[in-house]
Length: 92
Image (tube, rainbow, N blue to C red; front, side, top):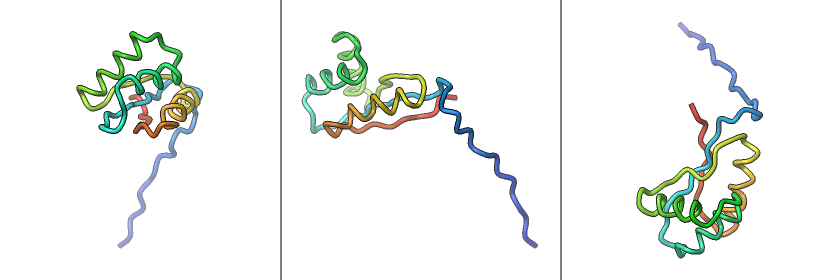
């Protein structure tokens, strides 16, 4: 006997602010190189970009920016220009 599962459609509304860009630590980039790229991607002041980079360095990952998907994708593209590892997570 075959049963069918109801699958809820995925909400593709990207206008909400339910996304977070995550930066992962790696052993390939200099610390200051990452700080500069975070500044370039976000426009954050040096202190905030340094704090994010330090969190990624010590904890393995750090939230870079939260907001609409297009904002996260834009910042992600800039971080990935130098092959930084990132992901975008959907906020609950």
